[in-house]
Length: 196
Image (cartoon, rainbow, N blue to C red; front, side, top):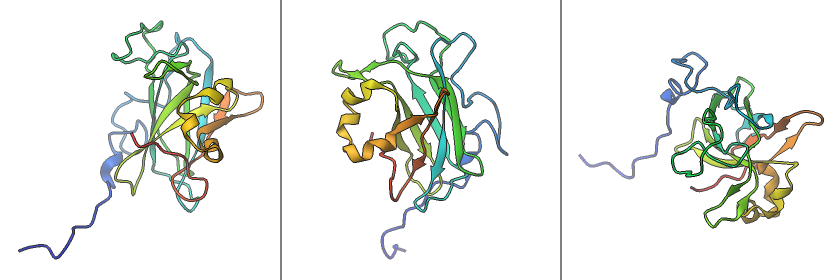
């Protein structure tokens, strides 16, 4: 028997969640948390927080986010980064799920300047991946810091139209080491996502 036409696509899940996040009804282990910090990691400690919103502006209570980043000296905890890590205990990776109101948070350090493949300096940033219901593929974006002068010369940020850059820049709360960036998966003010 032949199908009558093209088979429709299918979204991931609803089962993708278990085993991926350290909290919730399917918490199997604590190998990954929302923090890259250990007691001996050096650098300015910051919190990144915000909400994940769908195309209608409604909270997404079941999204999962992953971050990875360089340390305060701009070095990655990765075998491909041949520069030695000054602190081998820095993971540079964290994962968290959103709560019922779509909130997320990460405790980390402010990353240093990282060279791009051509050696040009990239402003301090954090790479973020979003996994959520209804998506066949996860989304990649970057988090930049609102009080970073290097943003003006960042080669990746320069590729983003000026009127869309604000969707990548986390605003610092006055007097605190807290940066806020809401992620909009569709619609007005959709976050810029990269095709990598």
